[in-house]
Structure formats: structure tokens, C-alpha cells
Length: 209
Image (cartoon, rainbow, N blue to C red; front, top):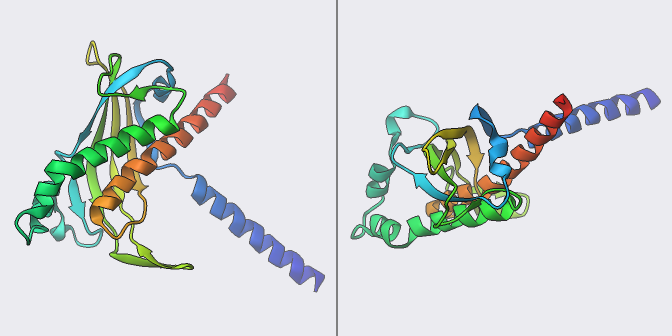
């Protein structure tokens, strides 16, 4: 009986460790430069979200993949409401979500601003899967969540030199029954994931010294 309990504990610890490793996994990969540039205080950056190469996918059949604008137009069954809402309010709401959550999570670093003077931060989105219409949780049904691929690029505003490029894969957003809400959720989670990545990167660099 004692041996059985010990074996069960061993299995539990392995599962627990595996869970921690999954939780700790970052969606970010450094492609160029030093990401600690982002942790410079009293520096301001203008910002831009680039949707020009964004592809919407269902994650199953590549034949269903389509550019973001084409996908948005395909949703318009009622007087171009999707594209109109995007131009009049949704795009601005996404910009705001990106800026506010970035600044809130990376408090001791570059701050995004419409009047930045030091850097330019460009968020390039390349692929997004909006996920299921709904999903089952222990507490009941909830909206699905999106996941996105892309790159975060930092440029010197005065010289246009590319200082940092961070790629991200399967960056998850917040749950929502609305697809635009899921897109906003990507920007809301990006700041938190980026903050965690920078903290881990900083610790790793200190250990090397």
C-alpha cells in the first residue's frame, strides 16, 4: 500500500512539473537585437498595429485561409456593418487596448504614446485563428478565444534602425463570444506575456554574468 501511494505521488509530481513547464512556456522568440531595450524608463514610443499581412485561418484547412480585410468583408451580410464598425470604432478600440495594456504591464520601461519621441513600436500580425464560437468550462459555457502569430518590432525613431524583433506564436487572447472581442483580447494579453518574457530574459542574462 505504501509503495502504491509513493508511486501515485511520483506520477502526480511528474504531471505537476509538466503542467508548470506548459504554463511557463512563452510565445515569444528573439529574432534580433536586445529585448531589454524595452525596459528603458522615461522613454516614449509611437506605436502602430500592422494588419497588412494578417491572414485569418480556421486552423484546419489552409484553403479556407483569407486576408483579414477579405475575411471581414465576408462577414458583411448587413449593409457592410463589420467594415464600417472596424473603421469607426473597432480599430481604435484595438489600438487603445494594445497601448494601455502594454503600458500597464511594462511600467518600468518604454511607454507607448501617440506623441512618442524615442522609439517606434510596430506590432505586425501575420495569422489569427479566432477559435470556436463557444467552449465548455467547469463553470459552464464561455466564449472562445483567439490565438495569433506575428512580430513585435522596435525601431529608433530618429534613425529608423531596427533594434529589436520578437516573434510570437500562438499568443492567446481573452475569451469572448464576439470575434472583435477576441482580437482585442490578443492585445490585452500581449502586454502580460511580454512582461513575463522580459523578466525571465533579464534573469537569464544576470546569471550569465
